[in-house]
Image (cartoon, rainbow, N blue to C red):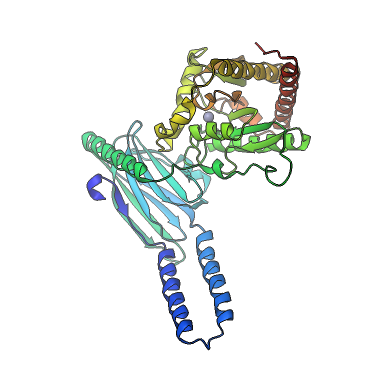
Length: 455
Ligand SMILES: [Zn+2]
């Protein structure tokens, strides 16, 4: 693969060898049974599959654990070292705009101490990592200037219980970097073309309960969408708080509350710290006929640190203000930040739907935004000076599912950070949102019964 610019560093995981060993010996055993029918066939045949499956399952079900990571070096050479419990296969390639190195590896249980989030060198701005699906993980090295992978090694540490994977990052000529990045992109795209099915994302495996056997559950479905995930950390605030973790904790609280109330079914676009593309989030809400899509964020506005308080965004081609336009633009880059190609999955959204449906969806989204803000105001929540804004968020593009994006607060504001980590405050906020969801459905159902469309 070197000729296409992807540096492959194949380190055996051991699973392959174990599988070969079992296959060879299993076959030998089966052959022996054919030639020696005296062998207690039933016992051997019964035990063999159990032995094979359990041995493989044990090896496969325990992903390697990343215990520690170090980053050191200068402007010309930096080295990233990750301590792992097992050997792993890694694939490294560069990507442009912004310049970064992507390291793909099998699923890894990342237990790296949080302090590593602030590790940097003059050459490396930041290292992000996380799961990309059930069986893939990714490390993203954000570069301050173009650089390519140099020497890669995997060595046993002195204790003998773990291995250190070291990746040299060497400053590169911008033209060479650009060329390698293009070659890698070309290779990835041709690989995508030959793969039979696009990645369904983590959410694709969430089953819809109660549709088989029992009577279909007719309660409206609320799709909660905790933003970011996996290598896409979202905003990083003071004390290294990641947006992806803040919004996940909040979404889980809200899900629990809604389920307790019993009027709705609730699904989440991601339930773990895994990356899901923006289009996949939209696709999931449409596929499952969600009655409402609520994307949850807590961003950071680098240019406007004074901005704080709760904000509801609805989708629109034209942003209400410059800050919203900047925010939507940075949110829409989420796929690229995690190194995903998103263009391939677009066609799903481009269905030609009746304009009336779109307009109705849009007015429902606005109705929910107003209902929620009314509720928040009544309970004395601190809101943004302009709490209802619109912009072209990709995640709000479902033409037939009312969708909103909530900014719970901003990780660039000290006041908001302390509130988001306060359980009493969070409880108040989830209660207001759940109340607003109930009121919204009560209104739309009543309107539908009377044949009235909201404005
Ligand atoms: Zn966000």
